[in-house]
Amino acid sequence: MRAVCIFLGHCLIASWCVATNPPNIFLITIDTLRADHVHCYGYNQIQTPALDDLAKGGIRFAQAFTPSPLTNSSHTSILTGLLPSTHGVTDFGIPLDDSHATLAELLKAKGYHTAAFIGAIILDSKTLAPGLDRGFDFYDNFPVNVQTKAHWDRLERRGEVVVKHAEAWLTAHPVGPRFVWVHLYDPHDPYEPPAPYSQTYKDRLYDGEIAYADSALATFITYLKTHGWYDNSLVIVVGDHGEGLGEHNEDTHGIFLYDSTIHVPLILKLPAGKNAGKVIDAQVGTLDIMSTALEFADIHKPEAVQGMSLVPVFEKPQKINRPEVGETDYPLRFGWAPLRSVRAEGNKFIEAPRPELYDLQSDSTEQKNLYEPTSELVATSRKLLADIFPQAQANQPPGPLPDPKDKIEEQNLLHRALIATQDNRFTDAHRALEQVLQLNPKSSLALRQLGEVELQTKDYSSAASHLKQGREISPDDPAIAFLLGQTLQKMNDLEGARTVLEECLKTNPNEPTARLLLGSVYLELKNPTAAADQFEAVLLVQPANVEGQLGLAKAQIAQSNFAEAARGLGDLSKSERDNAAVFDLLAQAYRGLGKGPEAQRAEARAKLLRGK
Ligand SMILES: [Zn+2]
Image 1 (cartoon, protein in one colour):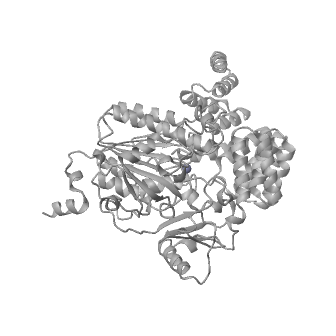
Image 2 (cartoon, protein in one colour; image 1 turned 180 degrees about the vertical axis):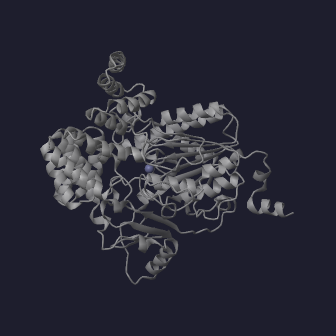
């Protein structure tokens, strides 16, 4: 009897529960998708037929909000049902802690086959999104050594490529139930839609990228329908965040918490097309996706999950007015204050050094700041934020930080410079960074990026001068020290490079790249003993590090320790069969040992590999 009660208590709609098999679940996240740039959300200047069709056959949430305007944080919230400050992934590269259950993990435990197909390296679990692959049988990371300067396939995949990978996996895994996450990155900047979208939308390239992503979605939906996997599946389509497009002076996203970047489309297509065509106006969050999907799979949601199931929201439409909170720590990366926001009862409050309050009924674009320190609404909002983010005060670094509102132009320029650098448009990057320095001569980020650009364009003396300035402002930034070390090595100032790298490693002993560079500087300084120490220190932490093993072999050869070098290189040549440098060094070691024929064989192998 008890089991039955739990059963009914858990599932609001018994008809799903009695269904013999849990449904396939397809989660499609479209990056950087503003709700008000989608046709079925009322934007008439774009064609998004796939999204429109899904809305017709499903439930469209007109008021859905992400708790974070940053790709990694917001995706982690979708996949855990937790706020960024709870799951901890508040910037790129921060690992998702094992203690937080993921949707994929829970579905897998229930017998689901699980796979994820990502469109950008920022969600790669080997580098910038560690832990996000937890629970996935297959996670489509980017290849490690891609020899291309173009950003396609190295940093980003077109929507059609992502969809093709997902289809191949589904074809190879035809037995359900399956949970597949497809990430379409295209609308993220730079805006470069392929033809014909580049032409149709030539004056609105962001819209062109959305229209293109919609076509990739159409391809995927058609594939599902063709295989008979559409009707009985749960399909969830959601934007991870929006895009500033210059509103509030924000070009892209991540810094602010205005609706331009936190209001996203959310569409659910239910098994058997239930509730088709429904539009829900109640305010909901992308945080609620996890609990909703778990309910369809008949899995109890973990107690820690902060989002709620959307089933009651669309099954028994009632006056639900749940506050939606937003948070961003991204400004901290630039030395500016983090922001927190709450959207409730038609108002939005943003906690900042200069706080903001907007009446969204009369001012939907958040232009007229009504903040008064004594306002009752402000007090209620602050109480709400304090309940949800009890750690917020404790997490803030001491001292007053600048308000991001006063700094946004710097961030726009730094971002433009970053995109230009990735595209090898160094003159554009240089110009943008000089502009940042005009706004803020003490921007160590601009000095660092400028030094990096000048290092790449071989303007070593300018690079050294900017990096030295940056180092005075941020003496503990290992990236500046590393770049300066590289620059000085190029300028043949080996003693200078050694000093900078030694200092850097004193404060950041776990920087293997700096240590490898220091090892190579010591080799050039004809000090193989000191070089060997550095390479061995790297290998102690990362025994498989190839550069470390090669460096150590060079140091051993320089010390005439040919036997040790040959032994290490012999082992390395088994895993690095196509690495010419390994065989070059192996030849040197064999020569040192007087093993002529072996040396010749290694030389021949190196030559063959180089000829490839
Ligand atoms: Zn994103």
